[in-house]
Structure formats: C-alpha cells, structure tokens
Length: 229
Image (cartoon, rainbow, N blue to C red; front, side, top):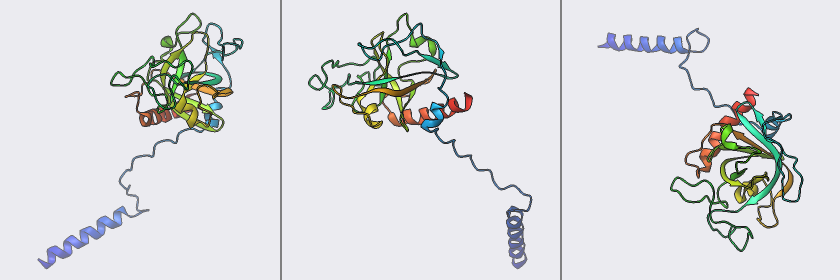
C-alpha cells in the first residue's frame, strides 16, 4: 500500500512539472475574448465617402431642400441627417396626444406579442416608406434590423421600428434620442444635424423589443462592419 501511494504521488508531481510554463507542453486552451465594440470614431471613419443607392435625395424636414442621399457600404447602408423625435406607438407619459401633436398609437413594426412599440422605452429608428426614391426592403433592411446611431462621441444600438414619410429622412424614438443626449421632447426636441445612422443588412434582433439583444447584435455587426470596410 505504501508503494502504491508513493507511485501515485510521483505521477502527480511529474504531471504538474510537465504542465508548468516553459516546459514545451501546451496548457489547456481558453476561449478568446470577444472583440471590443467599435468606438464612434471607428464607425465614422468608415462612412466618409458615399456610394449613393437612392434615386435622388431626401429632406430632413418639410421646409428643407433635398440634400441627404442613402449610401451603400459592405454589409450596411447609411445616411447622415438630423434627428426628429418619433413618439408613436404605445401611449405613455412622454408620448401621447397631449405631448405630441402628431401622435399615432401604432408603429409599422410590432413586438413579439403583436403590440405597437414603446417609443419612450425602446430605442428605434424610422426609415422612409418605400417610394421611387428608395425602397429599404430591396437592400436587406427590415423591421427589427439592427442599427447603430452615432452622435458626437456616443453610439446607440437600436432597431428598425417604424416607417415615415416618403420624402423625409432622419427620425428616431424618444428613448434613442434621450440615450444619445438629444432633447427627446416630441414637440421641441431633436437636433438639426450631426447624426449618422448605420443599418446592418439582413440583420434581425429577436425579439424586436429586447434592447439588450439589440446592443449585443449591433456591437457584433458594428465590429464586422469596421473590419470589412
């Protein structure tokens, strides 16, 4: 019995020595850490030129001229515009007929339980309704698709949540604006310029109302976008 115990102890000591650093024996593999999400500057560096895919350009507001094209990149489409505030969908303290003159109690895309989205709680972006100028459906953009919104040094990950006028571009939900530090008031808020919207082609966040999933999916696709452009 004593011999057996001594033999076992010797084998354990040999195994420990073999696994020690510098002995030429590989340690057990560990999984690589996920790539870090890109910064606002990394994303903006990839959208300095525009390959226009829209048949003409869009207005940012009713009273402005058409100046905003839709641009194509590897894995995404993007535009640079203003941000108007979308408060449509579920009635909340922030979004209702009293706070928003143009409030509409529905959104083009619905939750997994077929309810309108909640603009006060969910960051989402509005795309122009299909027209002869551009049809988002032809470029892999759809309801629930992942979007990166860049404003200043901040990146907000959101989903495609609603459709808007056929001639106007640059709109996002109350919550998206608030998270980016933009005044989210549907009547007096928004910003006139400086917002970049990057829509990742053929992506989908499921369920659409889960913002954590939007962040995870968006960060992964944003890293791929930076690496592939």
